[in-house]
Image (cartoon, rainbow, N blue to C red; front, side, top):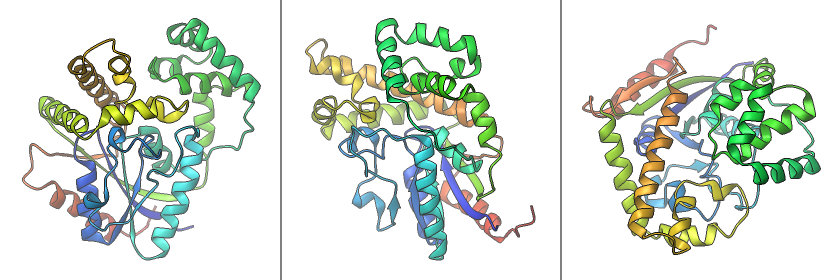
Length: 312
């Protein structure tokens, strides 16, 4: 089958992915497909930094704010839905441009990963969730490292859902997440990717942008949004920007202390994103603090990509 030529705009939070993607969509008659695991949820618009109507500038956006916060959504769910959207965009003669910072979403699409359909064992999940609550993340990761050290090393202690999922996969299939991922990559080629990364060579400039973004989020009503979202018991409560404000909302710290914690956690998140993306040598990095025009730099890469014949 002919693979669908798809542009990916990736990078850490606050690096300028949204603006770059929209500018490129205008140049190349493109449509945006979000690859952000928090922007899929309704009700966390501020924390997820989802673009609003004005920012979209008339460019169609897909995979944004379509799920209730209580609904869980796997990477397999995302890949299946995103592929359908990408195919539809291409069928209408437009260019699919995937924009986001969720590394697993990006790599699963770009690597043409196939996920098996597995029935969820809700009894097992409940047992694992109870155990997590009893012994905590660090102990769960220690246990995970006994049979899947690669996944245990990669997962952050805050990522409760993926830690539990790693146990779930092993106990239901007998395979580790690492083994499952290896098997998954043997699927049919579906997408031909061009990966473009946007970042700052001077890390402090990126951190300044993160700090400014947090200040703007707070001005726009982040604490009110967090108060509502934290009542939900779903995937969206993991959004950076909500759980860091929980202490303030309970009266345990000041707003300024919560804001500093949020900035710190967001900077750490950006580091983790960069660690993930730096493993992928296909990414063509553009450094916003070293170029006069990131849009033109990216446009040149896309033009060459679109003109290149499918020979592989």
